[in-house]
Image 1: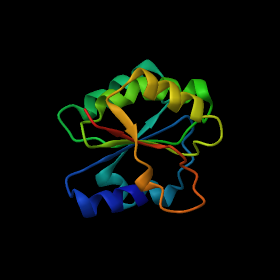
Image 2 (image 1 turned 90 degrees about the vertical axis):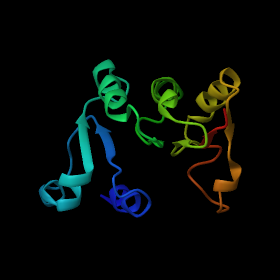
Image 3 (image 1 turned 30 degrees about the vertical axis):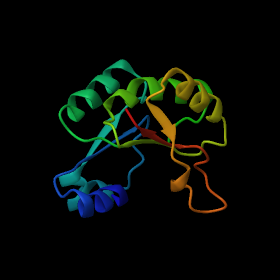
Image 4 (image 1 turned 180 degrees about the vertical axis):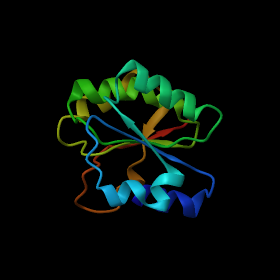
Amino acid sequence: MLWALVLGEVNPEGRVVTIDIEDQREPQARRHTITRSRVDFLLGSSTAPEIVAEVQRQAEGKRVLVLLDSLHTEEHVAAELQAYAPLVAVGSYVIVQDSPLDALGAIDAFLAANPGWTVDASRERFRLTNTIRGYLRRVR
């Protein structure tokens, strides 16, 4: 709901697609007007082929920002970057949350293999952050 509210200020037509392996949403949150009108909840692993395909379908022809905040292992983040980075247009971002946990290796490998991307350290505005080197901006 929070991301839907924020997105609504920038793009009133935008939608949030969220993915989780378990539906732990509170019943009141499921029924909320914002959730029903602006949020698509997909149940499954973010790297499952059917989930990736559905996100790709929903993102087609739209401006996309990807926020990765699921399983923070290097292997999983690498798979998510491979699946979702192609959806992002030049100038937009993939944001890897909790990058200091285990994701830095995946970020480094992704950047080495994808020269059209860079870390946008200007987005790290605080001395303490859970998104170290995690703002990946597509530059070409």
